[in-house]
Amino acid sequence: MLNYDLVVVGGGPAGMAAALKARECGIESIIVLERAETLGGILEQCIHTGFGLHYFGEELSGPEYAAKFIAQIEKTDIVVKTDTMVLDISDNNLVTAVNKNDGLLKIQAKAIVLAMGCRERPRGALEIAGTRASGIMTAGTAQKYVNLDGYMPGKKVVILGSGDIGLIMARRMTLEGAEVKVVCELMPYSGGLTRNIVQCLDDFGIPLRLSTTVVETHGKERLEGVTIAKVDENLQPIDSTREYIECDTLMLSVGLIPENELTKNVGIGIDRITSGAVVDEMRQTDHKGIFACGNVLHVHDLVDYVTLEAQLAGKGAADYILGNSDENPCYVNGTTGNGVRYLVPQRVNINNKDDVKIYFRVGRVFKNAKVVLEVDGNVISSKKKVKLAPGEMENVVIPAAVLSSMTADSSIVVRVEE
Amino acid sequence: MKRDLTCVACPLGCPITVEYTDTEIISVTGNTCKRGEAYAKTEITNPTRSLTSSVKVCGGVLPVVPVKSDKPVPKDMLFDCMKEINSVCVKAPVKIGQVIIENILGTGANIVATNND
Ligand SMILES: Cc1cc2nc3c(=O)[nH]c(=O)nc-3n(C[C@H](O)[C@H](O)[C@H](O)COP(=O)(O)OP(=O)(O)OC[C@H]3O[C@@H](n4cnc5c(N)ncnc54)[C@H](O)[C@@H]3O)c2cc1C
Ligand code: SF4
Image 1 (cartoon, rainbow over the protein chains, first blue to last red):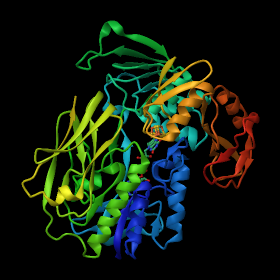
Image 2 (cartoon, helix red, strand yellow):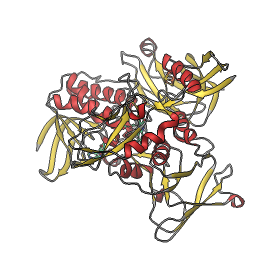
Image 3 (tube, rainbow over the protein chains, first blue to last red):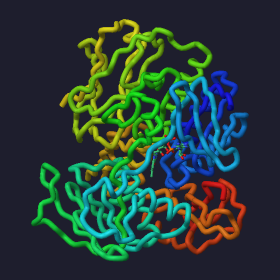
Image 4 (cartoon, chains in turn cyan, purple):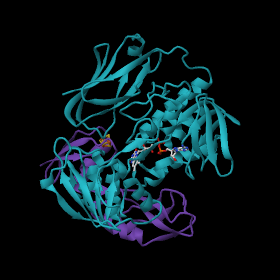
């Protein structure tokens, strides 16, 4: 059995930033376990730019953003094991992993950071009639084909779901000479960033049809076309609006699900809405010494925020290992008010001495609304927003001075005022 | 004249309103930072976009390496630039930051590698 102070599960931007922060805070023995051949996570296939503007002040592509962190890791003696899959985490922080060289690895950790990222919702999660013709794939799989394997998966494309990956792939396929016929979105609003609608669809005249879905796929061996239809308020397809569209490729960009099998096995509490762990402001789960950050905690659209969150988790884990963390935390749970779907962190230790940033997403589109933070019924902040959309993560800050005035019975509410 | 834009200079995507005449920009509102103002001005006068793609690698581990334009290129030249990019095959090894195509189609932008192969 091996012993490490900190075991980081996943070597994407979250795992790398957490490991580096813990090292900066004085933790000597750190190991990062990554399932893929290289560090970098999903960023390796995200070759478009738009990463790092907030964190580095320059616009980088995914691989460039990752490379900066990989270079920093390489300068330290943080141990990295790639091609290594974590299979289990036990109640007493024993990590079981496997790889070709070492076989089965048992690693006893003092603290663990979970940074496994998320995966795309597959076709099985949708109700589409039709055969299992080839040419139907998730947008992320298509992204991997085009950007890493240098192979074009099709010529005439329909995209279902307006998540960022789908939008990015609409532009990528178009630039490579494919015809993207339409992007269909079930909801009355897009799930992606507005900037991506502008520069990936509008720029190329690709239509985005809201409140529309794919109801049937056609073709035996290879996809030959799809039938799309508008949906009513209950998201049920309206038969009279059925329309056939010829295509050889259907890409699904219908959401990401945090990869929390390991988390659930340890018995860590999961938030029903985020599908990630319930955490405090240092991203500690309800299992002492286990932290979570990045897309495994909640789906982020900006990697910059992933990095910041992972640094909190890295600091929290370091404090825990060094015995500097609060032995008697006093937690207050946040409450989602009007229009707010979830909060991360879900609970805040009011003994914390720093400002606490709470991230959230709204449940629908709001125009000219206010984001209000209330503590014990008092308005702490009220910020005007021209637009709020479910695709864009927002945040509010609880100032340290407010925290110090709170008690165990205090309340924290984040809501949208129209 | 007045036009509503979404700033694409960073992922915050601020909604921007530009007022302009045929000869000058009168006002830019809604932007959070300077980059937004600059974006709005070029968007009205000469829209540009950064271009990312990949180029073939000969003799490397991976079949392609990702690239970007180190400056935005005129929006109406994106497809011409793609033709150039797709006609190239670089020899391995490729290093991050390496210039693959200099001054592509006279736009002043270089196409550079964004990863090691
Ligand atoms: C297509 C796409 C486009 C995006 N575009 C942008 C953009 O323009 N701008 C921006 O700022 N952000 C963007 N993002 C968001 C950003 O890239 C992600 O939020 C960020 O990469 C998440 O980092 P992570 O480390 O949490 O997860 P990941 O990058 O997914 O890393 C998780 C890692 O954990 C590993 N892992 C999982 N399970 C195990 C296990 N059991 N054992 C060992 N290892 C394991 C995985 O192999 C993976 O490497 C985009 C994301 C995607 C998918
Ligand atoms: S105005 Fe500034 S902050 Fe707003 S989207 Fe543009 S670059 Fe980003």
